[in-house]
Structures are given as C-alpha cells and as structure tokens.
Length: 264
Image 1 (tube, rainbow, N blue to C red):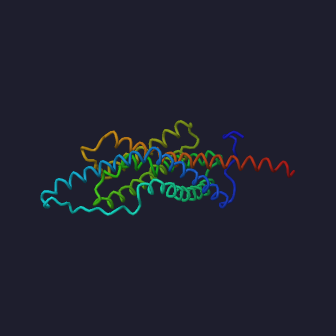
Image 2: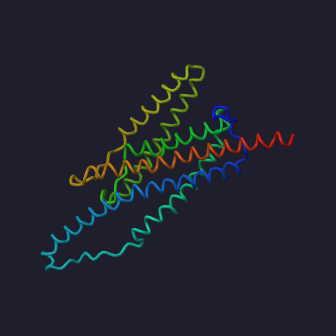
Image 3: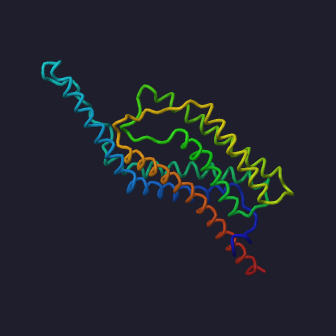
C-alpha cells in the first residue's frame, strides 16, 4: 500500500505508545552509533587539546610554586571507554522517552488532521527536529569539551531552554498559518507558514543574547566537524524516529487489512 494511500492514524493510545517506544529505541541506538563512530574521535581530539592547554598552564605556574605542581587532578568517575559505551544506554533511554512523548503527541494531533498515519508521523518528526534541534542549534551551536566556561553553564542552559521554547513557538505559528490558509493554493499555504516560522525565529535570535566562548586558538576545522557531527547525530535520531514510526504504522495497517478479509 503506497504511503499516499495509507489510512488515518488508528489504534489505542497504548498501541501508539508501544509503537513509539520501539521506534524511539531504534532511533536512539542509531544516533548512538553515529556518535560512537563519528563523534567520539572529535571529542577525543578536543580533550587532547584541553589537556595540553592544562599541562602548559601548570608548567607556566610551576616556577612560582617552587617547581612543584599542585594541580593534582582526580580521576574521572567514568572512564572515556565507559562514556563511549554508555552513550548507547543513554541515547537508548532518551529514545524511549522521546518515542513515548512522540506517540502521545500523535494521539492528540490525529484528531485535528486528515493526514495519513505515516505522513503525520513524518511531519511531526520534522516539526520536532526543527523546534528542539534546528532552531536552538543555529543560535547556540554545540561545543566540544574544550570550549565553554564552567561558570556560565547555568546561563547557557537556560538560554538553550529559551531557544527550544522559541522553536516550539515558531513551528506552532507556522503550522497555524498553514492551516488558516485552507482553501488557498498549497504553495501559498506553504510560503505563508514558512515565512511566519522564519520571522518568529529571526526575531527570537535578535532578542536572545549571543554567546561565544570559543578561544581564538581553538582549531576551526575541529570545531566545525564537531558541530556537524552533533547535528548529524540529532538528525539521525529524529529521522529514524519518524521513519520508524511511519513504517510500523504502515505494517500494522497492512496486517489489519490482510486479517479482515480472512475473517470475512
């Protein structure tokens, strides 16, 4: 059955939750794989730079301390190998949580649209990625471990939350305008929705303060690669979540249609 011919999203909330949990788990593990094979080498490189800078600073302070370094560092609670392997558990659990929220949102959204189940899942995944990932990322992009001041972590966290709320506002307004233009040409509706989304996002970017804690001597190539990898990891999660839920929905629809004639 082609995607365009799929029926509206049906099934109980429990069914949708189970579907979302499975799709979310798969999405989380795929995102963790991207992080493990592509992202971790960039993190290791950033940590090496941080350690080299720390050693240089200690060496510069050593003469003033009588030739002895008092910067004894405690061993990390979790080793780097443990952190690398642990991201599969962390992102797997995160995928389960996002999958449950995703299914709950679909349960509500299906009451206000005639879109097929797979199309609705893909559309919601795209909206979630825009609101939670894209809008915050292009205002406050991810930084590797060697970048960022520890004293500003609380401020940066709250600004990121504000950017996420901005993303939800921009996406919500765009969808509202698209639906409000019902009866117009599809291109006009799409242009209107996208324009409102961009206007709200741009206004939020102007109002929110900027943060730039990247040191001038930090390698620009490594910074760009880390940020691109971060975007690829989160993009993989949301793309896999939408596609996984859409595929499971189509499979369930085909199974139901195959069982019904047999019963008849």
